[in-house]
Length: 156
Image 1 (spheres, rainbow, N blue to C red):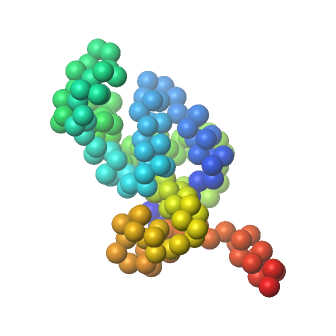
Image 2: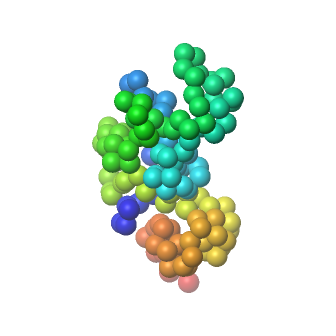
Image 3: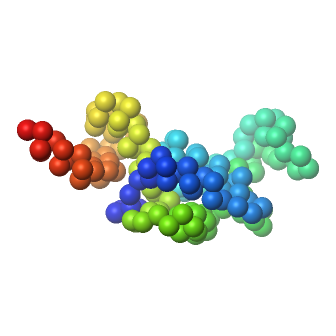
C-alpha cells in the first residue's frame, strides 16, 4: 500500500503480542510470514498446505489436505481475506497506540528495510530480494529516516 510505513522491531513485537482470541495463532503466523518473507499479503493468505504430512502432525482434531489454505477464514471455506486481515492488524496497531500509516503492506516494507540493511544498503541486491523489475519500486519501499538524512548532512 503506497504511503504506509514499515514497523520498528519494537512495534512488530508489540503487534505479535496483541493478537488475541480463537484465531490469535493464525493471525500471529500471518504477521510473521509477512514480516520475515516480505511476501505480499494476497500471496500469504493464499498459501496452501501442500506438506500435508507435516501439517497433520501439528493438528489435533482436523485432517488437512494439500488443497487446504494455511490461513483459513473463520468459516473455513477459503483463505482469510486481505481486507479482514487488514482489520485484524489495524486492531493490533490501535491497541498499541502506534501512529503513522500502517497497513498489511507494512510487513513487506519492514522486510525490505531489514534486507536493505543486511545487504549493506545495497539497493540492487535488495531489488532482487523483493523481486522488483524496476529499481524505482525498490526505492519507494525503503524507509529513509529523516534522522539518518539529517545526521549524514551534519557529518559533512
